[in-house]
Image 1 (cartoon, rainbow, N blue to C red):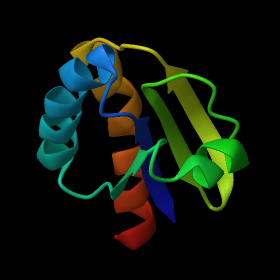
Image 2: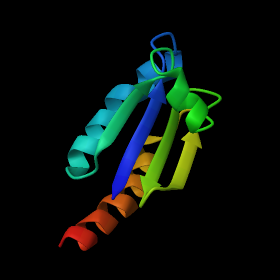
Image 3: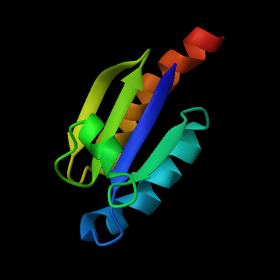
Length: 94
C-alpha cells in the first residue's frame, strides 16, 4: 500500500503555496491516496513521523518511509517523484 502524507499548518506560508499545487498533482495522478495532517491539530502524528518543519511530504510504501521532502518543492519534481509511486501502485493493482 502506498500513501502520501502531507504535514502542514494553517499559519505556514509555504504550505499555502504548496497545498493547491499538491492537490492538483495528486488529483491528476488519480490513484495516490493523500492524508493531510495539520501539525497543530495532530502533534502526535508529527512526533511519530519526526516532522520538524512544514510543509513536509512523506510517501509511505508498505508501511515504510520511501520518500521525504521538507520545504517547498517544484511542480516538476513533485510530479516526477509522485508519478513513480502512482505507477508502482498501478502495477501492484493491475
